[in-house]
Length: 472
Image 1 (cartoon, one colour):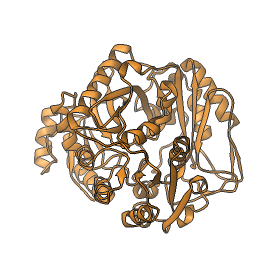
Image 2: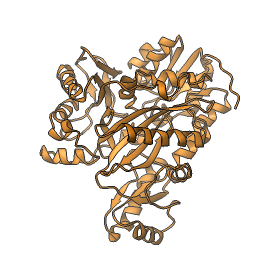
Image 3: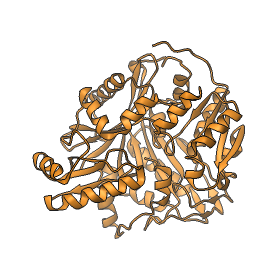
Image 4: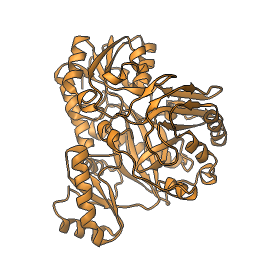
């Protein structure tokens, strides 16, 4: 494959919030001008203030602004940009958007549209990964055609099974089924939810692992076939399949298992011709057997913990790869130093998880050794009710996991946000939890944690998540 290299002069960021700010910081270091797009309610957001140029692309609803492809492409052409960075959520994993960018001769900072389409279809992705030698859970080889087919496969696999949306993620279109009598209703509910969220009601089933860990492998691949993995992230602490806290490395990881999982991810990347930053998500069972879940063909919300322990700017590498530059380093050059933890701070009640939009009256950021805060808000900023509720990420880095937990507790204690409710008190309780401190966690951690703290699960408002595509 021949690829020409040309430094970007100007990049449009097709996103909002903290990830838009995060991309701007790296662009400034690289001497690249930036264009921020925004809805009319986001005109006072920090990403608009710190970009070199900006354009309003529509009213508050995402479908009329951040998902408005004609408006975004028009802004890119008006401002004569070289490339578009999609961030995460919104259009980041839209093969159609990437294809439009390609057709308009605007570089999409991410993989090719065909690769996005392949890995975005969970059934096709499973098939591609199986062909590449990646371990997958037993399940249906195709989207299900009927309840009878589902029953036959479930009997072969053995209960419990999980029904999943072929085109989705973020927990929508998913149902755990423990008995044959429940399967028909679960199929219908999952299909209807998937159709509403993704305009595609196809579902499949696979074996359900009871108390797995959610482990991610971060990869970087250039356009010349070179690929490395940047260790792993532990993402098991999540509620309704939405992550709350991540760390690197995983408390249970061994050098041998890391090498095995990393090698599998690299081989999979090469098999599908992947380039850019990407993340392979695996389930790790109690016997430390791992199984492919999905691949995210974009930057992740939790990428800072990997950046902290590997001293790597993932956004910079995304941009360099998109410019046609070779990766420039090999697997032996990747080091992991210390331990990092990230807490997602949401504008939500810490007890009921009810969204809490409103005006921030006080906003004090923590500081000190090993503390990083990625945010887009400030005192006086009004958090709108239209988008994902995450307003900041607190990331800490320390020599050991024990010290990282103590450092996160100190940082959260010093972080003062008034005027709205936030999940800071919830994260402080997690820091003090004996199971978390011991690293005894799984994807069931929050279910047990909430019950142990006398908190009852309530349905979370999904309006913003449905509009944004979530922020897994």
